[in-house]
Image (cartoon, rainbow, N blue to C red; front, side, top):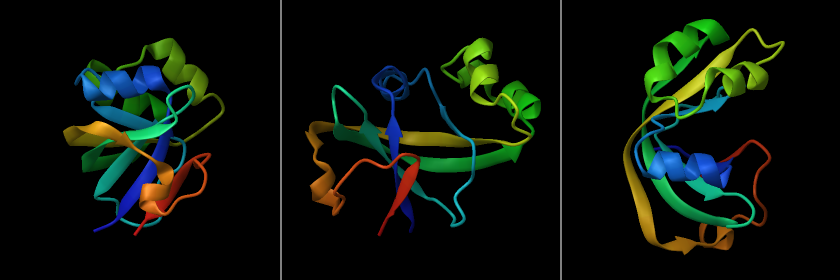
Length: 123
């Protein structure tokens, strides 16, 4: 079982937790197979607020990923295009079984000292 910690903007975190955002987009795929994502809500929250299982990892050119994910992307096309500008590859983690923690957790609870820029493996 491999888990990663992702730093995510609080607006996107809210959409993941309320179910309107079923995909988390990244510019690069992890080298290891990922089973679970720990959701770190960035400033001003700065806590791990939940987790989700990874149902699937889609890797393709951005336009193909958008066509497959747009209905449950939780973002608009303009935001998506800006994020992937000048990129030939997009990664979308399809989320399932999202759990919101009753009490948000600290990074140190998972042996992490500072929030990752992109992601961090949690073993």
